[in-house]
Amino acid sequence: SSPCIFGALGCAAWPQCSLHVDPKAIFTSFKTRLQQVAEHDWKIWIVLAVTVSVLQEGRRAQRAPEVQAARLAAVGDAAFSGGRLAKAYAIWTRGLRLAGAFQQTHADRSLLVEQLRLRRARVLLARGFALPCASECSLVPDNTEARVLQAEALGRAADWPAAWDVLQEASLASSSFAASEGPESQLAIADLGKRHCWGDVNLFDLMSVASSTGHGRLPTSCGPLGFESSKLERVSISGRGKGIVARQDVAAGELLILARPIELLCPGDHEWHRNSDLEDLLSQKLHNLILRDAQAAEETFSLFSGSDKYGAAWRPQFWDSKAFALPLPDGAGTPNLWHKVRGVVRHNAHRWPGQDPDTGGMAPGLGLWHKPPMINHAVEADGRPNCAHVFIGDVMAFRATMPIKAGQELLDRYSTPLAERFEFTLSVLHAHGMDDNVYKVWQGQSYTAHQALYRPPDL
Image 1: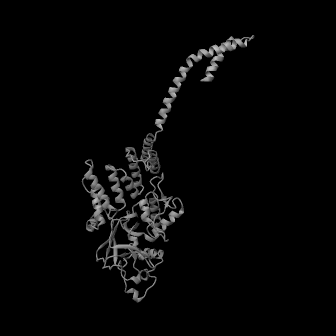
Image 2: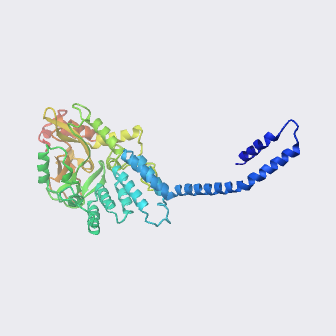
Image 3: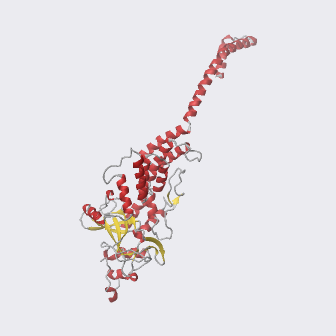
């Protein structure tokens, strides 16, 4: 304001100047003008001071952590709606930090904090971080939506008994909890998953469904269909790497493993092409999956890839609740990840009996299942296998073909009727550094009278 005031004073004094300037007269005029302005200027300064104070207070209110966190929640919602999950997660994490959610002294159960955690839980589940999602939901008590999301996450982690308990508790505690009628309801699916975990599976009903759907992928209404007998354990076996042995006696015909695929390439899928390299196509499909699904990455890298390293390594580390970004598999964005996926597929993929959509004839698909590849192949020296697998739709089921004593290894035949002259089986065995003369006989590479007496059971 001062330059404006003195400018006005100068302009007021200027007309009084002439060629014969009297300095004393000019100073007296200037002093008089200054006194006149000063009589009113203090009021202007008070008004300006009050105005600035109000504006600064408003800005401080706008900069309050709670207000900023609420704005970030809305910005994250827009990113989530646009499919930008990583951005939405980072924004909501920033909101939680501003709201003090990660401070040990923060004990308030803020509704905003709970809503931000619930939003992050949705992203975690969408990206396959099942247990972190369940952990995040556990921090949002007395919320029906959080309980349903937590149960879904526990189910994704194959802990269906815990998922059923969470939903059951929510249904009893909240009158607003409404489980829809029919097989698609949350409670019904959780109950089905719990029974499947205990081996309570009606294989004949599954076969009927598979037959009615053209022996393709079984619908989700059939349940998670995940089971591994408690009588089995995975151990290191000399000369074979890892395998599965019986820790208790197993009766003939007993169900051992039931599993849906991690990923499956079926005839008719847009990625499937006749006479193409199915291993390469499945590897591409699986590679894309594990970059966006942590659970799929964990299961995939628990299988043998040609090295002794098992399990997913995360970059920069496994999930950290305070971190802005979700971890990616080590090697993401480099050829290393692709080569590891390719190795897993080469050593563990199974042929799947599909149907050519054009000719109606038999055509192979290729899939990767989690538990089944852990059962090793019975070579000639092992004699006949003690278990066998069958496909029910896209589900792989293993049953014991003879009594198995505690301590004995489970052995299967890798071949399927689609393995032309057992070439696929031989390629898998070769990848493992193994060989089987019985299969070579039927491929026509070698023949002896003794070997001719043995005919592989899967023929």
